[in-house]
Amino acid sequence: MIRPAIATDVPTIARLIRGLAEYERLAHACVVKEEQLAQHLFGARPYAEVLMAEDAGRAVGFALFFHNYSTFRGQPGLYLEDLFVEPEYRGRGHGKALLLALAALAVERQCARVEWSVLNWNEPSIEFYKKLGAVPMNDWTSYRLTGDALLAAARAANEKKP
Image (tube, rainbow, N blue to C red; front, side, top):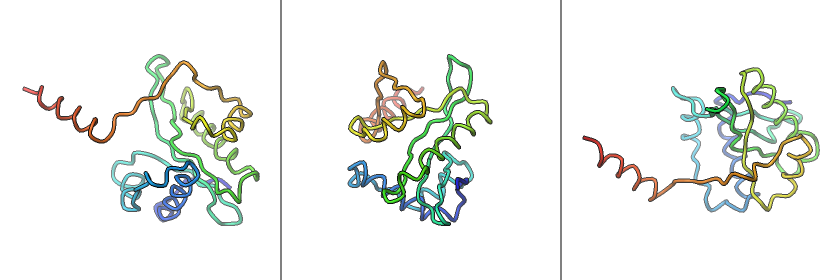
């Protein structure tokens, strides 16, 4: 069963995020706190939404997503930040159900597309996405501004203010 997350799901979402970090070999980089999730998902200004996958009443997967915007299409889109199903529950259709529910939500909200990134080494996920009809954006490279570089850019912007 797929359902929207509610505020009481925050500890479970945090657990699933840590599981994803382990799977992606990035546990060392996972510093999320439940308080942050509660504020950012269910606070006065939510930054993202979550769909939960349940199996026999137990949350076994999630999809965290947020809106983006296509200037060329003149339409909103959805960006899937994370999709994760616990290893022991894979192969039961939960990942597919999460993606299909997200696609239905995108259509309902008149979005032009759903986009996401996948680690290059994650062949099982890449094959899964291709089977659903997703295509890689091979002409694009993702960039990220974070940490000291982000702070330096913000300082530079503030220095230029009159």
